[in-house]
Length: 180
Image 1 (tube, rainbow, N blue to C red):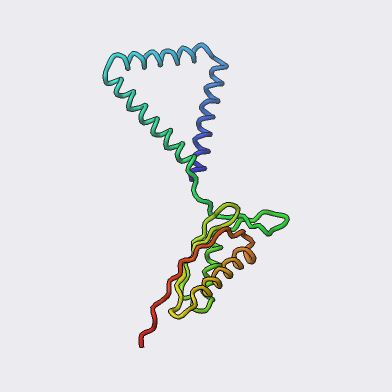
Image 2 (image 1 turned 90 degrees about the vertical axis):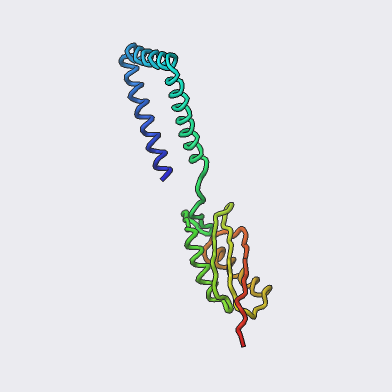
């Protein structure tokens, strides 16, 4: 959306500048006189009344705010929604982060004693970072289950999907013990 807005604004500004430049080439003196007359009228209006000065400050603040917001939107980029697959020859493939999360969830749900898993995948430098919220059964060996989860995560992301895995963080929660 922002990219479309940027392109539209740039196109309109350049079209305006193109028309003004063409007019300036064809009839330079009337263009200069028009600009000077308008600037003289603006100067007189600002100098003659306090309202003109207030209006100038308000317009200046408004334009400054608009330029600041445009600059902020230009600098502040949203997080990437896809990552490049490493193990491909002869082309370039991007894989969505949602696809990786779905595959991880499907594969982790197949592990014994894993009740629920919620993967969050974010693009990192040259690969992905994983945050896995895992709920398990009550009677498990935590270090062993955590190691199994890490092995499966690495196998799914790197070997089956061809994406570099930067780091994995696992938040493990054991389910309640059965009563009786």
